[in-house]
Length: 112
Image 1 (tube, rainbow, N blue to C red):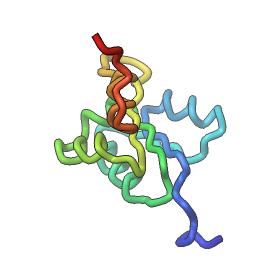
Image 2 (image 1 turned 120 degrees about the vertical axis):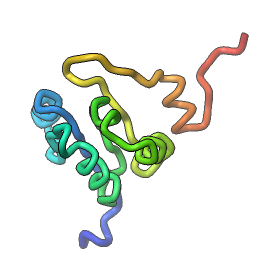
Image 3 (image 1 turned 135 degrees about the vertical axis):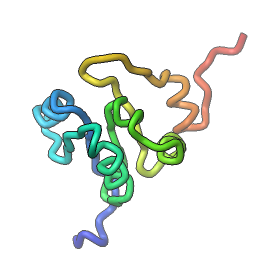
Image 4 (image 1 turned 90 degrees about the vertical axis):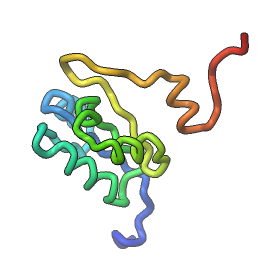
């Protein structure tokens, strides 16, 4: 199948060296080491690539994005964007309920 006819569904990981190394060790080949200088640019490249159904990015990448890029990432379903905690430092984690509501449109919260 040609590249143009390929279906999107692959996974790309964007993160610090430690995060990137970990994902490479489990067998992922589309892994990009990011820095503060290239993080936003590499994220945008991954979003526009068309081969990826899932973008896993370090939470630190989220902090490098413009407000418009963040909003696009948080509302995107193709590719689906998941921010994961960085190997060190402080971070903000999206709750499982918030992720399910964003992706599936379903709240997992129990009624009161």
